[in-house]
Length: 311
Ligand SMILES: Nc1ncnc2c1ncn2[C@@H]1O[C@H](COP(=O)(O)OP(=O)(O)OP(=O)(O)O)[C@@H](O)[C@H]1O
Image (cartoon, rainbow, N blue to C red; front, side, top):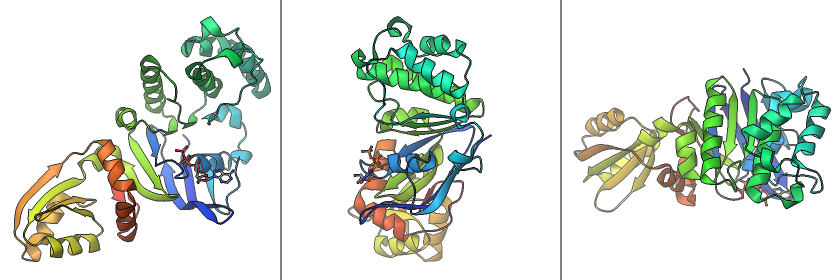
């Protein structure tokens, strides 16, 4: 079982901080969606985990070890990074053969993986003539070739057709069910919604939210009160992420509904509505990563627990 750990990881390019004091854990047996707007630092963080980029501070480990110190990284960690680098004049089958040779992987896995990603029909064609989706399938075949317990996949769904997306989802869920550790970045929020058990959300290189997706989705509470300003202040001080609408409407995340009610009662604030809200991942994502809420949530926080926690 391999846990992935990022501890206070920071990376600067020139004067720009692209990964900013990032600390989070990715658990085995779960699919973890790695989300954030373009340029948030997801790929850089993944490359740091894989020792392809050197952090300025902190470190990232896989099962307690740096990637470079792992005994058998090619068979322990399956990787898809963008863009997939293939020798265009090599066939898909030969590409896998070279990888299998290099990593001491049983060559029988090659046909098996070509079948699994449904590329057998094109296996002997040059990769230079593959479509984007075919290259993505080949990249996945390469990542899975050594049957690794850890998968680190940057936008693996890019270019896949709906059948491919479903296949990928089933595969990743199965890997996690077998105890694998799966970290997968994606822009396809509807897809992540069906795929991920956990999410880690970055914005401007910083961790904005991490937690169990089901808990995060239930974490919103709609509140209506005449004491909105006072309640907002109190709830933010208690670590909640609060969005204010018009006419005394609030949406509160990161605090249990009972706690909101209890705190309002203790402060003598009458509530006219207190309703659990299940947001779509897209709504939540926009809340977390539009800059106002990111700044709010950064200001509002606390321990990184195993539940829904804006940080
Ligand atoms: N080698 C590099 N040199 C300079 N800047 C870089 C380098 N690699 C990444 N960056 C910058 O770091 C920031 C984070 O990029 P990164 O690719 O990690 O983001 P991302 O979250 O993966 O984005 P996307 O969703 O668009 O793939 C961006 O501003 C990018 O321009």
